[in-house]
Length: 206
Image 1 (cartoon, rainbow, N blue to C red):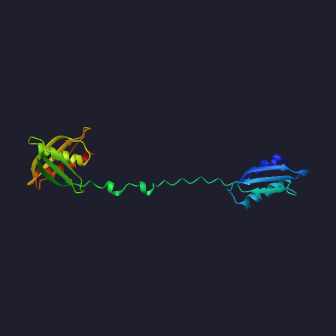
Image 2 (cartoon, helix red, strand yellow; image 1 turned 90 degrees about the vertical axis):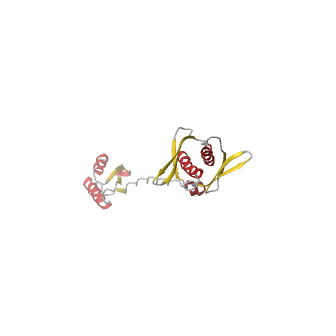
Image 3 (cartoon, rainbow, N blue to C red; image 1 turned 45 degrees about the vertical axis):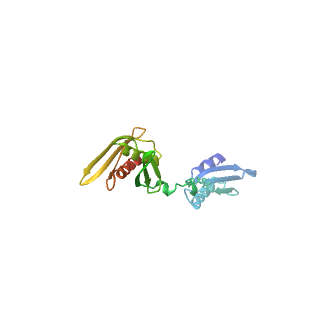
């Protein structure tokens, strides 16, 4: 059996991935096969031995059987990067803003002002303008200052009775045209209820 015929016969064996047949000195064949791992080494070796016996080249021949090279393992995906602790957002930054704690009216030689203080201690003072809506506008302006917001457009301030309770409804409009509303039950003075209702509306616009 010629070397090329022997090679073809070896490649026909199930479990052989590749085969190489070379003739050394004295025409002694050197057979090298690579297994693909689909069958056990013993089974493949038995079939190869049978083919070599049938070819008459078994005696004096050299046979190397090698397992198929294992594929290189694919690199594991990199774990998701975890930001350092100092880059994590502090919890207090996502807590709801504190509400209005007090509203006081102050009068001096310069006129009348309103002071709004939140539960967190933030405060702002706004001068009270003339007219019947001057106090309400000053309260809303002070609330907007506390939340670093320009004076919003006051769309409506409504006072109504709901199931025996007096409720203040404040509707405002931001610079971008968005509108928001807030309400509060009048439990003390009207300025305090306006401040709490305006605060809810301002927070909604931010």
